[in-house]
Amino acid sequence: MSRNESVDALRKKIDQIDEKLVSLLNVRASLARKIGRTKSLNHQEIYAPAREKEIFRRLGLLNRGPLPDEALRSIYREVISASRALEAPLRVAYLGPEATYSHAAARERFGTSAALVAAPSIDAVFQEVVQERASFGVVPIENSTEGVVGQTLDQLVEADVNICAELFVVIHHCLLSRTGRADRIRRIASHPQALAQCRGWLARRFPRAKLEEVASTAQAALMAKEDGSLGAVCSALARDVYGLEIVAANIEDRSNNITRFVVIGKIEPRPTGDDKTSLVFSVKDEPGILHRMLEPLARNRINLTKIESRPMKDKPWEYRFFIDFKGHKDEPRVKRALRILDRGCTTLKILGSYPAGT
Image (cartoon, rainbow, N blue to C red):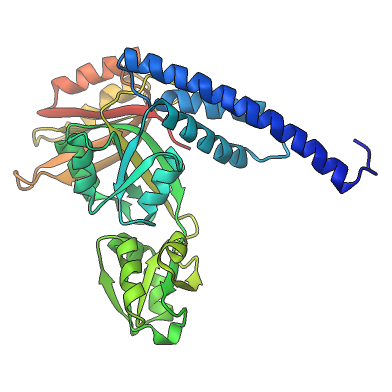
């Protein structure tokens, strides 16, 4: 390319490339629609987490720049979302209302061509999927600062759904209000997790403000829209959705504030070679029992990535143990470990084997 080419000449080349891109994208979409028809005839699911992971992995290998990998992923996320919509409508429930972090996570996973449906609570998201009013749901399961989301863990035990995928979202909180003026704020509302993640900042900057816990960050934004003396801790997306002003941005106490979300549904993704399995089990209260239960995983060289205990509501002082480990339930070494583990449990439920998130 000549250094002396004019802007008009370079733009003409871009126009020619755009013509080819539009044509190729429609060829790709036509092939996706054919795949959708075949899936429908064979009663296969439209959303295939393992296939999408393969696509993004391949894009990373093909990319030579100057576009960064994340930019390319964002472009293809929408390409895949639009193509999937041609295969069949996809309805996805999330913890609403609009502009929650769960909403942002659902958009990141399924793109803007999916029908994203707000549910009033985590329990309601699960019910949308269980009752098949939605194909999938997106719910938070843990935060790097505040730990697990108990409602999600409890529902995973009770509901007839699987974890189909996971994603990690970096959370940046904003303080929004109707006027954007800090001196007018008397109360600050948000979801309990969001308030906890900004506890230090709020104590320093608004020591006299009353903190109010509400069902979601977006509900706090709705309240701030109606009340000029109330500030809402929520996402930057809520500023545009609810017509608010930013008082302060990035107010979380820790810069590495990350929330892990899971996609719930009724499909069982196939192995990709980079998977995670989640399960929950309960055991009799005996000395050394937890060590004995985890021994089959170590013996089969399975990497345990998380363990969490939750009290059993119907049995005081007894606990369920939630564990995540690397590997898919269909791998031989995992099957061996699960057979041994199952023999020593009073209850065991595999919550899902799914592509590991990044």
